Structures are given as C-alpha cells and as structure tokens.
Amino acid sequence: MEKIKEFKEIINESNNIVFFGGAGVSTESGIPDFRSKDGLYNQKYKFPPEEILSHTFFMKETEEFYKFYKDKMNSLKFEPNVTHLKLADLEKQGKLKAVVTQNIDGLHQKAGSKNVFELHGSVLRNYCMDCGKFYEANAVFESKGVPKCTCGGVIKPDVVLYEEGLDYETLEGAIKAISEADVLIVGGTSLTVYPASGLIRYYRGNKLVLINKDATAYDNVANLVINEPLGKVFKEI
Image (cartoon, rainbow, N blue to C red):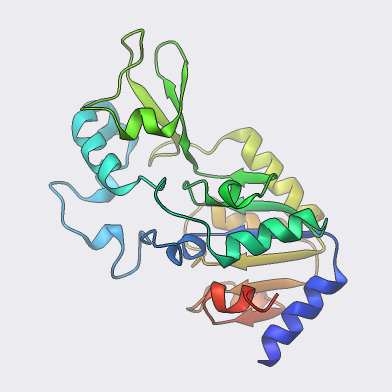
C-alpha cells in the first residue's frame, strides 16, 4: 500500500518521532474500547460507566466503584501487541523520543518503552488517600471490597477520573515532546477527548501522520492519513 510505504519512509528519515495514542492502540491486545459500539460505555451496569468513573462517585460510592473497576479495568492479564512492541523498538533505536498515551493499562512499559507520558494515569500505581503509601495493581485487584491501606485509609488508583485534572508535570512533558518533534504519529484515537486531543496543536512540524480506522476531525490538517488498523500498519515497520 502506497500510504504505508510513505509512512515507512517518514520513519526511516527521522530520529525525532513522538507517538500519541488512544484506546485503539490497546484494543488489539483485547482491551475493550470505551466508546466503540462494543465498548464499556455500551454495556449495562447499575450506573452508567461515565458516572462510575467520576471523582464524585468514587468518593460517595467507593464500594460500587471498585466492583466496576476490578471487573473492567484490570489490564494485568493483557499483553502488548505489535504496535506497543514496534514503538518500544523504535525508542531503542533512538528514533522515537516519547510516547504520549491516553491509556491507563501500562502496556507501553510492559513492551519496553521508557519515556511514556500517561495523560490519564495508570492502573499500575495506587496510593493511600490518607498517608500516601504506594501500592501495586495486584494489591487493588486482588483485594476484597474496598482496598485499604495498613493505616486504614482508602487506596485510590492513580488514574484520572471524570472531574479531575490532568497531572501538570505529565502534561508539560507531553507538550514539550510534541512541540519539539520532527514527526508526530497519532494512532488509535478519535481525537474527541479533551484536553488530551488538544495537545496535537502544539506540534509545529510538517509530518503529522494520523492512523485510525475511522476519520477524525484532524484529518484535514494531517500530512498523511492511513485508515487502517494500527497492527496492520506497524507490522510493516
């Protein structure tokens, strides 16, 4: 395919690439997308997932929150796919400078990527709300009921819930990486979730590549648009 050939050439010629990814990066590992017709938002629960995954709900209905969270947000059983692995390989080669992700599953790190900006946090990090003690994901996912710290405080996942702001340092790092990149590859995201999707505006180069199965609002400003599954494209790299 001509477009994939052009994509390969762009990668071969650059040593300052940044990848910005969304849910579509991980769906090929088996992790469900939030907004697709088969995604989490279209499954039936006692409360809508948008409500469950809010700060207010977490504080008021912590037990109900954790029922959903443990059932649906446990990414520990999933493995990185070809996209994760190829990105990690490009970083090892010195070509890829950073991964900016909206995902919270930790699969980029599992694949070997080092410089990852997790805009929405990670299920792998959890902290006591009272004393700040760190807990790994297993401590939360294997707990009964609401996970509690040794001090008695409630443990909260380090994920950005609705009504919560993004981490300032993570955001700053992502903006810096994107603004300094020669090539920006955007993959597996519909670019509808703000403020994350607005980060693309910080890109100043002329090699913006969008890889997504469906059209996005940014297609008209991209230098290359590939409407194919990410795995199919990255297998060719």
